[in-house]
Amino acid sequence: MTETRSGQMHLMLFPLFTGTHVAGWRHPRATPGRTHDIQFHTEIAQAAERAKFDAVFFADAQGFRTIVGREAHARNDVARLDPIVMLSALAMVTQHIGLVATLSTSYNEPYAAARRLASVDHVSRGRAGWNIVTSTTRNEARNFGREVHFGHAERYARAEEFVDVVRALWDSWDDDAAVIDKESGRFFDPAKLHGLGHQGRFFKVAGPLSTMRSPQAHPVLVQAGASEAGQTLAARCADVVFTSHATLAGAQAFYRDFKAKVALAGRDPEHCKILPSIQPLVAPTAAEARAEVERLTSFIHPEVAISMLQLALGGVIDLHQYDPHGPLPPIPPTEGSKSRQAKVIAMSAGLSILQLAQRVATSETGSTLAGTPVAVADQLEQWFLGRACDGFVVGPPYLPGSFDDFVAGVVPILQSRGLFRTDYTGVTLRDHLGLTRPVSQYHGHPERHVEPEIWSQD
Image 1 (cartoon, rainbow, N blue to C red):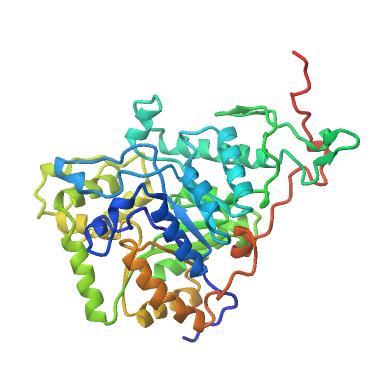
Image 2 (tube, helix red, strand yellow; image 1 turned 180 degrees about the vertical axis):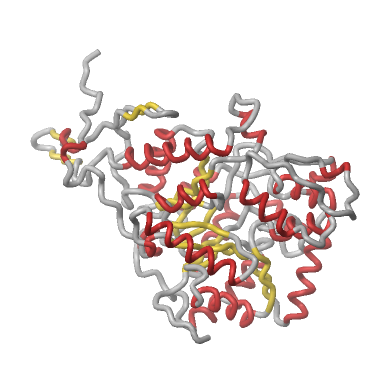
């Protein structure tokens, strides 16, 4: 390696309940029957903490993803616990690792979201993070009284306003607003409690938040949107950006371009961490690693693969009317994830529908990285030192086996090379990520104060 770079990489665990490979739950070393067992999630989070990971991150959707064909019941990601509830439980059995949950801006309200996330930050003593998503599935829409999902532009406009309101609510209390003087009988200083009085396109929120300012002030903001609208939102407010890239050159180009967007948004690019996702399969030899990839691929039911391909394309076409061994037909534009659709279409050159479907099903949550511990560590080092990323989202294909292999084989190599921490040096998730604690929007700006509408006697 000829590149030089100071600092160490960040690692977040993305367990996706049973593992990130769609058929990983069928692996002999997987334990999929424990999806709703909090002890299972405790064991995974504690293993990540022993390995000194920055955080563990839980995905979520408030409805079923599109399932095409009766045989697609072989999917593993349809049953899950509410991640906010999980974070509260895991905060009690961990001490250092960050805890990140997905919460949709399309099917929640800002006040409730701000209060729940601030509460988790208090409960965990400053280890909470929020993965901001806009949702994409029709089933979610119909679970919340809509026949169709929000359009792409409207979805992101709502998200922008949602995040602004949440961040403003997190500033409702000054850090020293609580007086708690028993002698005078004064619990808080009303001059240091701020209303909001927000009236926007999508929301009207009076404020203030009924939860005091949390240890991190603002839980860490995570965002994964790769579309232009998603990148605009992330550049303006995200502390961590999840990405997915097939090549080093592609990752480096994204890294350069996105860091420039963060700077144009008036922020320090170092305060926004870019973490591409990987699916590591670690084995004693390269041949064994390749065999493991083939084994997992053989577990994927064709109906599941085609169902996932249709979803990745935005659900705009029924592929079952076409020959699975023929090429992908022209695909109409989607109101779902446009960047995801474009990426899949770009992958389709020279592949049949079924071949493309199997590739999508295999790499849905990140690039499969198979090899010996040294080979995997070498590639992570190359990407990090080559400024393709600030670290990685590690999505084990199946749990707990493939994560155990990564922790036992790859992490010690990264630590021995000085690329990853050997112990935690901070307390909060912001500390782990090298992020500053946000200053309240009211600090030094008394003119921004809004008198709370809480003093009336009626």
